[in-house]
Amino acid sequence: MSTLLEVDGVSVSFDGFRAINNLSIQIGEPELRAVIGPNGAGKTTFMDIITGKTKPDEGRITWGDRNISLLGMSESEIAMEGIGRKFQKPTVFEDQTVRENLAMALRNPRGPFAVLFYKKTREGAARIEEIADEIGLSDSLTRKSGELSHGQKQWLEIGMLLAQDPRLLLVDEPAAGMTTAERELTTDLLKRAAETRAVVVVEHDMEFVRRLDCKVTVLHEGSVLAEGSLDHVTADQTVIDVYLGRS
Amino acid sequence: MTNSFLMRNPSTLWFLLGLSLFTIVVTALSDAGIGVMSTSFVKTLGKTLCLCLIAVAMDVVWGYCGILSLGHFAFFGIGGYAVGMWLMYARTEGIVLDSFASQTIPPTPQEVTDAIGNQIFGVVGSSEFPMIWAFSDSLILQLLLVVLVPGVLALLFGWLAFRSRVTGVYLSILTQAMTLALALYLFQNDSGLRGNNGLSGLQNIPGFEDTPQSTISLAFFYASALAVALGYVLFAWITSGKMGSVIKAIRDNESRVRFLGYHVESYKLFVFTITAVVAAIAGALYYPQAGIINPAEIAPIASIYLAVWVAIGGRGRLYGAVIGAAFVSLLSSWFTGGGAPAIPLGFYTIQWTDWWLVLLGLSFVAVTLYAPKGIGGLFDYLVRKPS
Image 1 (cartoon, chains in turn yellow, green):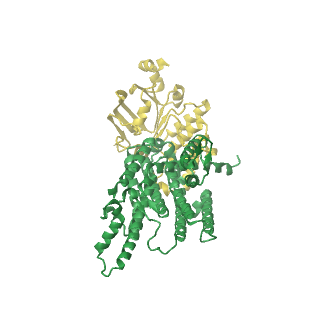
Image 2 (tube, chains in turn green, red):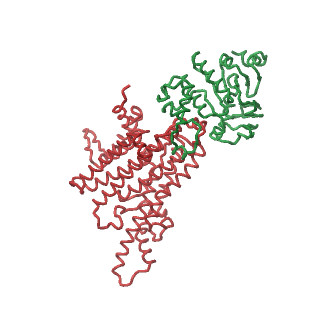
Image 3 (cartoon, one colour):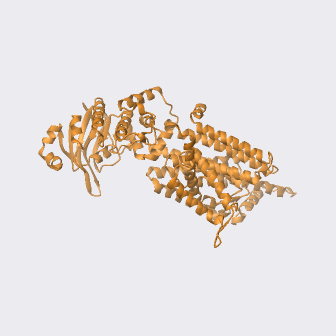
């Protein structure tokens, strides 16, 4: 397992509030990693920084085999580097069909003229079928994604991530609002994805994290409080104090 | 390719069919046919087609891509001015040469130029040709300017605005400011475009002095119909397929599209610029039929009307924009032209010239609140698939 993403000493403040404070974290490839922490620990800001939505005040973020810096790259450039992101609230394009949503995410040239003259290919169609099958939406390809259930929208969004074929998937609370059966399918999806790439899951739900059965990073007040297996971090007294102790 | 594209988009085919039928009916009723339709009404219909074309462009930029531009009528006006400069120059040149023809000594080129300048700019107390008239003696160059000036302006403005991630109502205000600045500039007598007099006599086409207006009006009507057809097919093509997917996605959730790896700004710039160019072409066809263009045409209110037409017709469907523009603009000329009878209430008489705008405003509010799909939404009931 080689290091894919290295976040080194990153800090960011909003109006004097330090959302991220000297945060350092390494993600390997392939790897499944869970990031947990109480509200306001900086989990979402952490993702915002990696994906280019928020610019850090200091620190370095290096990516890939050539150790390039992600700082100064735009959101779309970072996405094209191979970092996909799933938002907390399912954000699929509700006005469009499941197929259109997946087709937009497929790994193809992204320039306006390439897209304007884009022709559907058999490989693309096959890939869409394959992903739809994996996320359990084979029968819904022609449906408007706005008609899907909450859980299905979450899967569609994960499917869109897979279609992008990223090396790193950032997944924000994938299990929120899901039934137990839906959660199991989601766990399987993420575990399978993590066999070939890096997957970082931000999650509140400890039961879900336990099922992921992976290395856990605990964030607190914008920096890493503890790291290791779930049993290891839940036994840590400081973690119990700041996080588990409150719940 | 176009063939299969049209086959996959039956609504475009239906639109083209309807437009062809409309053209045939108008020809049959005009002086070229049984002659019951007046030349001025043919011009009104031709102008309406140009308004439909700019409405389709507005629908693409607003209804599909979510950019509420309040500046597209400025591009329309620039197109009109660009073609109007040639019309005015060439026609004045003809008149001046005619008047010199009776002299025994042939005039020098300088005398001709001065006389033309005097004719055109005398009204603003000048006879000098401003720089921007440098190409006005060439139809081809002025036609190039019809697309180049709005294209470059839209590209520059859009690049600055989108790059700074100005969106939503702020962008609307910015486009409106651009429009207002342009109109105010043109209102000045030293703008080089005859200030508030604007350009006039545009209905007289140089080289066709002996052709009756009834024939010219039909020719422009056909040209407008062709432009609408081509513009409609172009935009139907752009808004279908993957491009359509991406621009609708930008409308619905711009930042999500960024995380998919699309450079949102390029897409907005593309849509903004191409619609600006089409709007300018519509303007270049409109003003020779209107006969006159002045800066008041470019004032921000015109672009607001444009948004109202598209909203009433139905955003996000091209035929909705056509319906809205045709319906509202024809209704507007009926009401404000004294066609609608005044309603005496005893204590007060409703004069539609005053009250039409109130009615239009109320319809806009009503459509926004109760029928967000507009008039075009009615078609959903016609073609509803059995579920």
